[in-house]
Image (cartoon, rainbow, N blue to C red; front, side, top):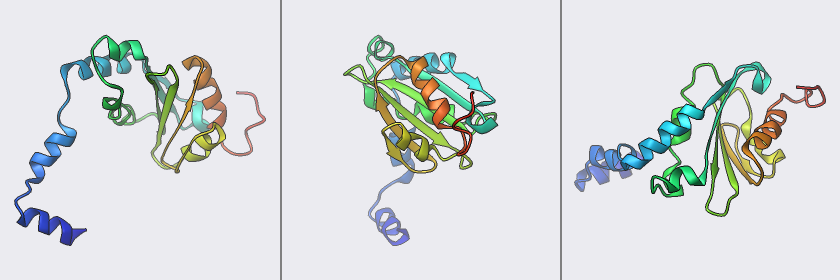
Length: 157
């Protein structure tokens, strides 16, 4: 990897320009969608085995109103996962078909891959997702159960 990076630098690739293009640009509409998603964010300190869950939703209507394509929403979870009080971050994004893509991130102590596999999706310990239909509140209810530590699955929430 370092050899490849060195060859790219020698060829004239400017890392700061690439970084800016990839991470530091967004249309104004994205900022408005992000603001709405952050305003709807909910913190549940007791969820995920007491390690905390922060979650939000982005409906298709939210992004349609601001002309933001679905594929520009990936960075929302990176803002949500910064929450100190939550080990797990979740963004429920409604796609163009009306289904919800539920993207999850963990800081390492909670296996979100296990939870997502149990809900029909996949991923790994710190990043996983699943797609489902239904209302976001019901989806998050199912998710809370899937995030309980093994052995606590039969206990009421």
